[in-house]
Length: 625
Ligand SMILES: Nc1ncnc2c1ncn2[C@@H]1O[C@H](COP(=O)(O)OP(=O)(O)O)[C@@H](O)[C@H]1O
Ligand SMILES: [Mg+2]
Image 1 (spheres, rainbow, N blue to C red):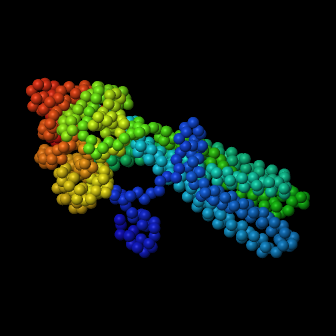
Image 2: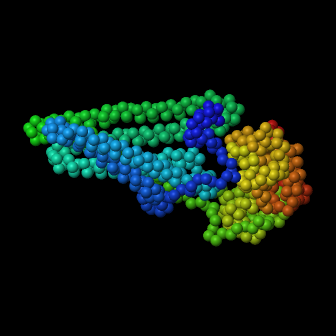
Image 3: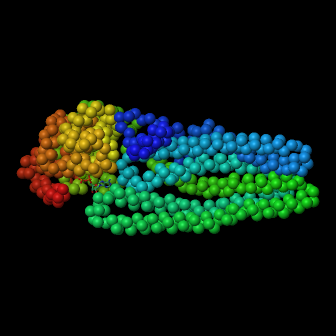
């Protein structure tokens, strides 16, 4: 953090500077310090969007009630002011019946009440609004975390991010603002009643401009809302392009495609500008009307009320009061028009949020699901069939047996379904036919938490978080002591290069771990899984980016680690296959051969073919890496 910021913080000891300085990355071992959301959206999708959102508002009803009461009081006090001034004009200035100070004090008191009530009301209104936003955002995120891979195969992450930002905001604003505006309009109605008791025709004249104000506000919003949607959408477009540019900067640069990307961005930015100009156009057209409507109203009241005064039917002070009322009532009516339009937007936003919330996770703990014990060992895939959502079958009555403590290598062409087998073993997906058992128990009847703790899967392109290497390795066991982290790293042959980094295990890796090489990332990922110490281990091409000498060192230590562990090695190279007790060949969604490497080489021509193919494919990327 910059020295300037530190200095200022030292001087002021301001909480805001503390917050600015705190890192967004928290040590993973720290227990969560955030309160859970107070309420959730009503799950009954037959209800209207507003009724489903009401529990969110209800959870903060005390705060919200104070806010509404205060804004009611504030407007009530404000309504007194024109009345007091009007009476002061008539009774102090003209009739000299009451001393002027009397009214001055009363007006001062009304202003003070209004000020305080306004402050408290607004403060609590915003607090309610942000509390709703907090609850909703947490609920969406919690729900997203509960959804399974088939869902993530379908959706775009940009969409999800926008739903948890602009859509949440639209719903939150409406929920908090609409009741407030309705309360303010109620005050206006009360004031009308008072005005009617003074002078009926003048009240009608005063009121005449208000429906017009309302109508103009609605008309303007109607024009503006599509444009503000457009602005949102186009800003999201720009954000996506920037994100892809930054995320894919290595690809962009290696193809010298900066200019092309730049013109993509320029086009998107131009579209943003165009929509902002449209917005300015509409505001420019309508703003004068909205500003001048009250002035026309003033003229009409002056003309009609003035005539009444001239003929002695009305006091000058009352005329002033009515004029002031008319001005005072503009804002609530304008806001009423706005809130009605906001309602449409909030309803659309809520619809999109509910679409996520109504999504049911496909892979779940069944009722009565049981924990898988720590000593789980033997794995069977019995007649397992599987197809992804697009319907293409990947596995077809697949049979695989991993005996307790056995290391089996799974070999097959690219796209033959090897990674799919790995994903089925920890129930990233559920089989569509047949079953998978561990120690004779169907995995479908086990809790996901226990299953995933016992079946460790390391993939070839592991994701690392932008936290320290230590926290990355300890991801599955945040409380693991440093010695164990180092031991896991040593087993994965990561200790050497980590220790050579200037900050060692405290080095924070760049986004997705891109400051490390592919092979280094893979070694961290292996250490991460070894630290959890799962009795069943699946290595899905987990050493594909690691060079041969290093791989041999890992194998030496893996050899010890795999001892007694049931392991499925999805093999890529002969040296990896050599680790296995037995090799199985996957083709056409089935195991077509099984035996030791040398047995298969002799007896199974398809095995030799597949290996040759893999070696061939391998020459390209591996040779140049
Ligand atoms: N998430 C997915 N959604 C749809 N199809 C997929 C998905 N993942 C893989 N596939 C398809 O399933 C087949 C098997 O893929 P995979 O198990 O990754 O093969 P391998 O690991 O043997 O290269 C491929 O045809 C692939 O295109
Ligand atoms: Mg694969």
